[in-house]
Length: 282
Image 1 (cartoon, helix red, strand yellow):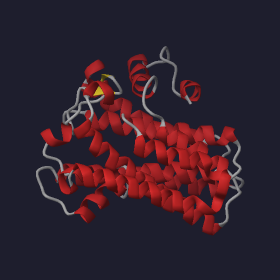
Image 2 (cartoon, helix red, strand yellow):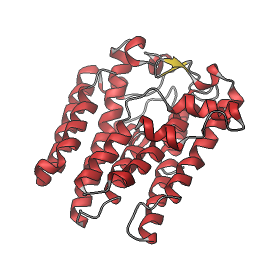
Image 3 (tube, one colour):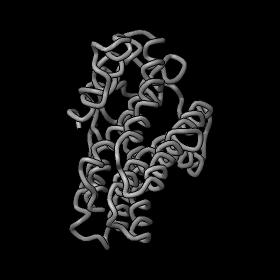
Image 4 (cartoon, rainbow, N blue to C red):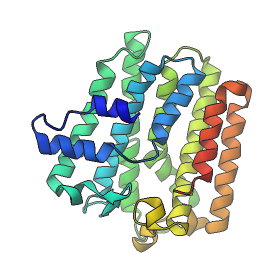
C-alpha cells in the first residue's frame, strides 16, 4: 500500500513543491491502513483483481488522510500529534495543511476516474458516488459537524451512534463495499451481509478508539491521549463506562463474525480484521 500511495501522490519535486511535500507527509509513513486492508479483504471475497483494489484502497486512504489533516486544525480538534509525528499544520503551516487536505480529496476521485475499476462505466460511476456520499455531509463531513456541535453536551446512545455511523463508519463501509465492487463474485444478498459486517466493524472501530483514548498512552497511540475527556466530547466511555464500552466492542465483533458466517473460509481476512479492530492496542 505504501508503494501504491507513493506512486499515486504527486512527486515532491513537482511544483508547487511545498504543497506536494505536505500531502506526502500526511499520507505516507504511518497509520494502521485499516481501510485499505478492508478494501483488499472484501476484494478477495469478491474475486476482484488486486490491481483494481489497489487503486480504490489508495483513494480511500487519501480521503482518510485529508480528514485527519482537517480534524487536527486549530479550528477543529486543535491537535499537535498524529501517527507519532507533528500534525501537518505544525510541520508546515495552517494554510498549507488546509490546502493539502483540499488537494488530497479531488486526487482520490481523479485516480478512481482514470483507472478501469469495474466491468461497466455505470458500475464505475456508482463507485464514485459511493465514495462521494461517504465523504460528504451525509457521511464523514456530516459526522464531524455533529461531533463539533456535541461538545459539552450529553448525547443519548442512539445519538452518539448516529454521529459515528457518519464520522467514522461511513468511510469504513465505503472501503469495504468498494473493494468488493472491484470484483463480480457476490450476489445481492451477499452484498447485504458484507454491508452489515462493514457497519458493525465501523462502529466497533470507534468504540475501541474511545476506550483507547482513556486507556492508552500518547506514545502508544501516536496521537494525544485523553483528548476527548479534555474537550468534553461525548464518547462511548462517557455514556456507558469503560467496562460496558469494552463489552460493546466484543458484541460488535461477534455480530461482524455472524454476518460473515455463510462465506466460510473466503472471508478469513475480513474476520481477522474484525478481530484486529476490536483487540488492537493503538
